[in-house]
Length: 156
Length: 300
Image (cartoon, rainbow over all chains, first blue to last red; front, side, top):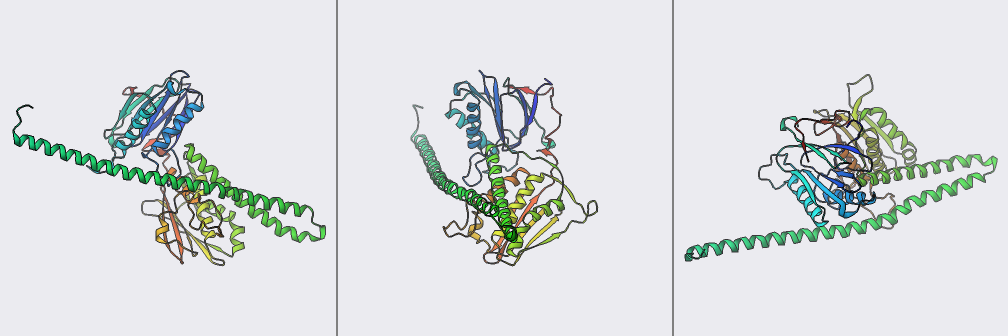
């Protein structure tokens, strides 16, 4: 357990590795898709903040549709086959008490992720999404295991 | 369900009709949204191809000048050495420009690849500002533009003021703002750089020029990638239109913001706000070895 290389995943970035890595990240309304190749035992993860790219900013993985596309691309680049890919889905809590507001960033982030994964026929093996609390996750790129903990609101 | 009264039937029908209407409306809204998105993508694609033709000019032209000038220098007679000085100055400004553009392009590529992360350290803001200004020294002198620095931070160690942030990113942000200010200034004017802390100890940096200014309508679009306001073929200004979108994306990384106030014909002021980085994300330590394994961890 102590021999893992570590990576802290910042928002709007993504991480894919052939080496066994332990990737941790903190999610609020952001969503992280952990992708794992069951044959090659390699994995990657993204962390996006908004559902869809608006076409104006840089096309960065801050946006779900781009982050997921790029994550899959990178996995395929490392030699994964499309049919070996599995996904796990985390985050998308509603952090801001906007009441019945129309923002619902978390909700929309999750929807984009689910739609895109379904479209590409990548099975979602596990997920923990929604709610009102943040999450801390640790993803092991070699086993595909994810350790997950809900955070207390007060610590935010 | 068999024994519905007329009234119940009517009610049921009404509800279904309403439901259908609602769905219909939703579909119409989605269609409009889809059309917007597809139009935006088309625009973006056009901008991108424009960008590529633009960028090759940006890279090829400076190289041609540098190559040509250095060739001339090589064949200069000894007694003509004075000529060399001005040519070296030209080479420097071309190379500087090239270096600046390339840095921007590489950073943009990194941002788009999701490989950018804050790299926080204690930064001496005054020195950083001075360094950035110095790098534009030759260009500003050539244009007769003076920098007026208003450093309004009192506390700190003597004259030095340290602020926790990402120095490389802040440097590039400032460089882009100053580069723009110079680009859109008239000859023999000045650029005012102010630094101060607001009530919440957020670092504020503003770059003010007295140049062409930006109309209110255009203020909405300047942060879009590849967008340049005067993209006509006769445009005297160079650049690829990435500067401000990179600035904005970099500010995202260090949780900063940017504001613009400008009057067409009178100049523009760009103000950035950068909160002091706590080296943490969302209230948790970003770096360090505090791998937080808990008993409470659920395993997926």
